Amino acid sequence: MKFFWVAGFFCALVLPVSALDREAFSITRYDLNATVEPEQQRLAVRGTITLRNESDAPQKNISLQISSSLSWLSIKVNGKPLEFLSQAYTSDIDHSGALSEAIVTVQPISSGKTIDLEVAYEGTISQDTTRLTKVGVPAETARHSDWDQIGRAFTAVRGIGYVTWYPVSTEAASLSDRDSVLATVGRWKQRESQAEMKVNLCLPANSAEGASNPQFEMFMNDGGAEKNVSSACETYAFSQLGQTVPLFVLGNYSKVLRQDAIIHYLPEHKSGADDYALALDQATPAVDELLAARERKPSYKSEVLDLPDAQDAAFESGNALLIPLLQNDTGLLLAAARQVAHAAFPSPRLWISEGLAGYAQAAYMQNQKGRAAAIAYLQGHRAALVQSEKENLAQADAKAAAHSLINDPDQFYVETKAMNVWWMLRDMVGETAFAEALRNYNPAEDKDAYYMQKLFEARAHRELAWFFDDWVYRDRGLPELRILSVYPRQLVGGGYLVTVTVENSGQAGAETPVTLHMAEGESTERLVVPGNSKASVRIRAPMLPQEATVNDGSVPEANSANDSFKINVAE
Image (cartoon, rainbow, N blue to C red; front, side, top):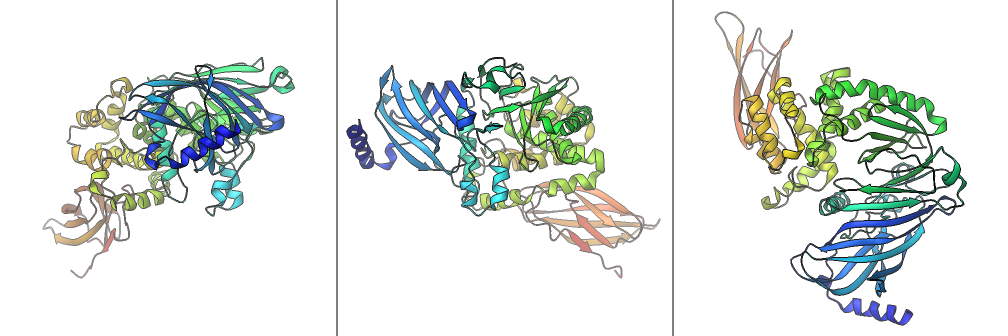
């Protein structure tokens, strides 16, 4: 066997690089048996995966990747072992910063055809912060971000993007290349969105906790009915992965039940569970009203799973939210608002589901603390968006559609930008039209890219194609606004009519508030300023204004340093 492995290694070296297209195949079905051994921090997987050639040409070389802490044992087709090259493949889609890649050669698979492979692999999964610390993330920060591990007292293992515990096939991604990891994971989600997954998750028969302790729970985020684990194994099934990153959790949990949610808490965190239950009680009616979702029954029960360390970063996928329940009330309220929004407003489109979840958090913040607090919340999430847009604009215009909210695979970018898009839409069309449009949304009918635009135009009775084209269908970057001039004209009957001219040197158009600030009070009108254009608005003011400002922070800008204009009162 060793001879054939070495021979295969040298054969692989002489293959041209183009011979291996790591994203030529998608995996359409996983049927896995996974045994978790907490005492040894081990995971052993056996099962069958179905791969489909998504490329236009026949393919004979297949790449399969798992975490570098796991080792390939065998790959078979029709029960017959296949020779394969096993190698380390550097990629930050795994917390270890590398993957264990198996390259196997089969009879050519035609475009659109499938092949079933029987796979076996195993190894340990311990906490690993390698990929973060190597790019300069402080060790303590890294520990609270990459907290995945199989442990004696607690186990939580996320999937691709954190720990690649099921086979995938992707090109390399690096955290030093800003959006590479998120984009790579996003492409995988798009390719595998229709994939089925069945996992029979087991603990060893001699595991006292798993076999006999009714408090010990095994959990996967398959969105199915709650399972009471009474044996060492439980089967979980995903009919379609969609945007879900499959994960598994083992812990000594107790529960707090709510109508649409189950809160799983660790024994020492009972008070945190009660606080989150209260947050859900407060957020649910408010978010339902914000998203006009009172009549839309959630398609699944939300599951909240407590994390042991209060500093650990929260993570949400599918119906599961992993979050430390011991944290401040504001953090719990915002997490609850987001989770309620996901359950209440499902959509096959990432910019809708993720964007509205972020919008719900900001809108809930406005309800609780006022508009200024909500805009501060929005602005606090914009630094990465501004940087992303600068880099995107440096690329060819032909890629403007690829980076759009509809097409971009980078979930963080889409989520951040879409949150602002929904906020701007609400400001543009008003609360009533906004709620009516959302109330009429049906995810099953969302087959057309223009579907949401048409809903809003019908309810707002205004043309919105310019906005959707600049912000949703294409990536034109961000506006960059500045006031060019302010001309006050005194009126015969008293007061002033002030003409304010605004320039937008960015490519994306925007509707933005223009405000006159006086010694006593303010006057505001809204103004649409197309990209690379100027526009003017006339505002009535009871007295001579001292300053004019464009944009109250509700519109994300490439540069907001020139948003104010001092008015010479001597004019």
